[in-house]
Length: 155
Image 1 (tube, one colour):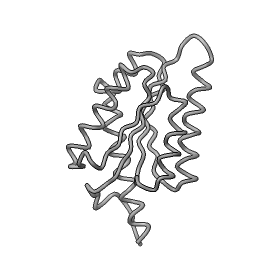
Image 2 (image 1 turned 180 degrees about the vertical axis):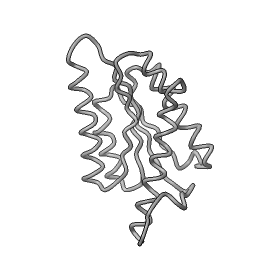
Image 3 (image 1 turned 90 degrees about the vertical axis):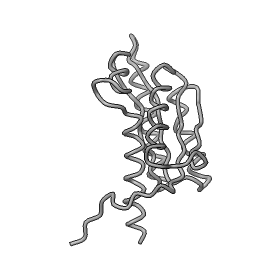
């Protein structure tokens, strides 16, 4: 029996992080956590590219463009979509999640969905270092694990 898991995670990972500027009080904390985690696992700054975009809906286009470069082994998408009083929330969540998934599948590349989709800002803040952990840090761990698994599948 062969078992493939996230052994041999490397620190030579080239990663791009796409961050939404909308709800920046939350997304900047997501980014801070991700960058701190990258340093903790010894990924050097020169292997990391951060791109800010206006909102969550813009994330998949930039993820796709980054994937086309062939430079990155993983793309981490960070954003915060907080429910308002209209149905706009539902459309944004669907567009960004489906867009990121499409890029991952079409480009055969880990595109990590670190976009918070919460009802309130309090719930979002609980996910950037509060009671529900830190989704920015978790996104880095997911990217590293996916790269390790894909490398093992390649040979």
